[in-house]
Every structure is written in structure tokens, then in C-alpha cells.
Image 1 (tube, rainbow, N blue to C red):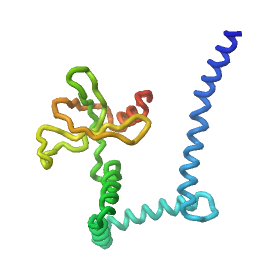
Image 2 (spheres, helix red, strand yellow; image 1 turned 90 degrees about the horizontal axis):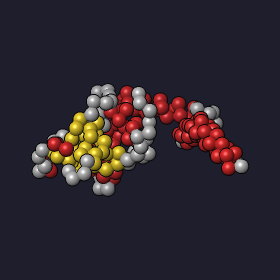
Image 3 (cartoon, one colour; image 1 turned 90 degrees about the vertical axis):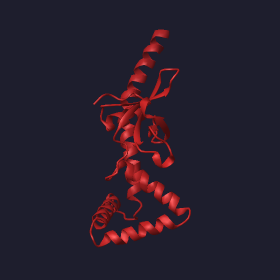
Image 4 (cartoon, rainbow, N blue to C red; image 1 turned 180 degrees about the vertical axis):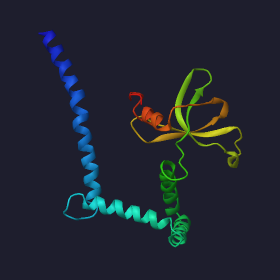
Length: 185
């Protein structure tokens, strides 16, 4: 009887391992798609998300033209001057800019020695190499993401504690976010 239970559990868990990702992935994608699609109340599935994607595209196109640049610059300057709003606005703007655009920040993966007494290291991304404006010389800012989350911590680390990784930033981020269980590229 004990062998039968072990076999049942073994194959049940194997089935769960195969079936879980195949069902959870489409469900999560559906929920994301549905929540975005229903932002615009139109009863044609997919039209809401299409309108949002086209609107964002057109804003990006408009924002890069000579005519709209000053307008967006004015709005940006205004948002930067409003107390409290400026903190939220600039944080969101900088965070978005770290992933997309010309000022991507998560492009240089590194291994950071966290402790000189114990051989403890963490994987992160250099986000700023020049910290002299804070009076910090020979140090860099390293963002270390947490596994299964896009949250993370910012550490100020001496340059000698940094080892630059030659692996692609995408592969490193995938590895860290998955807790080190992701398959190689």
C-alpha cells in the first residue's frame, strides 16, 4: 500500500509539474489582456487593447516630433514642479526609463561580493557608475532584484567588490527573478 501511495504522489506531482504551467500561463495572460481590454468599455473583445496600443504608439510618435516635443517638455516640467506629484511622477518616469528608451539601466550585470569574511555574492545590475555627486568616490550603485519579484534593493558597493558578468542582461535578469531555477539560453 505504501508503494502505491508513493507512486500515486510521484505521478500526481509529475502531472502537476506538466499541467500547471500549461494552464496557469494562458490564464494569467488572459487576465492581463482582459483587464487592459476593459479599460475602454467597448463590447468587442480585443478592440479596447488595440485602441490603447495604438494610442500609446501615436503618443510616442507625436512626442518625438518637433511640434509636440515642446508641449510634452512643458507638461514634464510642470509635473516635476508640483509637490508630492513630482516625487511619484519622476520615480515612475525613471523606473520606466530604466527598462525602455535610450537610458536603459539594467544592461550591465555584475556579481557583487557582499561580505569580505564569508564568500557571499549576489547578482545585480550597475545602475550608476559615478556617485561623486553624493561625495562617494570609487563606488557604484548596484540594483539587486529579488527572486519572483521585480522589487529589489539598491546597494552602494566599492568597485573592487564588483565582477562584471559576460552573460546577457536578459539572461541574468531571468535567472535572478526565477530564483536560479531557469533553464539556460
